[in-house]
Length: 327
Image (tube, rainbow, N blue to C red; front, side, top):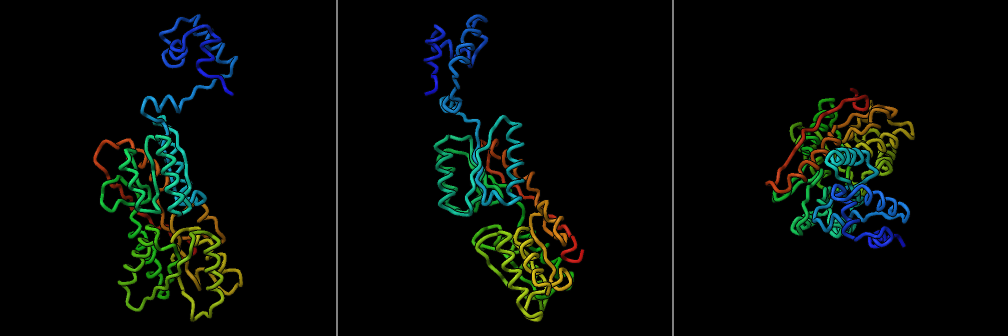
């Protein structure tokens, strides 16, 4: 069992209050007492319970961050932005991965509430999670939106991003398009599809096939690419807009396996997020760039404004053209 503050006081021959002053207000303690107490702390291996101290003070130095998929490089970059900005403010970050499961997300929210964190940054899979805000813990939505506007949020305009990606394919002369994404219940995926449909509506004769997958992963995209490769040239799309870069990389891999599809000659492919790996694929991948690091840093700033009125920050997406669409 680790030593307690009472053990330190007894061994050093001082009061518990004196040990507390040594730890928190050393200027109130004589040099001789400081030296004796610090020597006792080292001898006993005492470790202060900083979390308990923060709870007693009513102000934690930790924030919770819950993302949909911590393995996705986009969310990894968001987390890096959160951590760097939090560190500058003297805050630490506790990371949770919901895996797009509402129950797991709820469990993390309960845990962070029990830990009395300073606030929570959440990429929501379940809109009901906003109820946490009513429990007295500041909540900021990251890469998400608050339908009623009662929560601060930061994200990219995904409808605009979907429009940019699809318009680019149409401007390349493609007319048999596929949207590869899923689950469509995820807000970001649905918004990107809405943008794609808006662009399709501007071009008579263009067609959009929707391919919904259960996960936004390379493996899911590879399955789609293999399915495209198994079709006849007349029956498969001539362009694919993928809801993220991981899917796009998978579609690129799957399409090339049988050697029957050339990218971009037979199939133009564009992804979303512009992760670092996008420009390093066999055929460099066109994508829609999101400022992931800036999104994370802005989320911390919004959290620190929790006493102010909720703010909605929206960044504009940027089209990045590479060889996968003939750029």
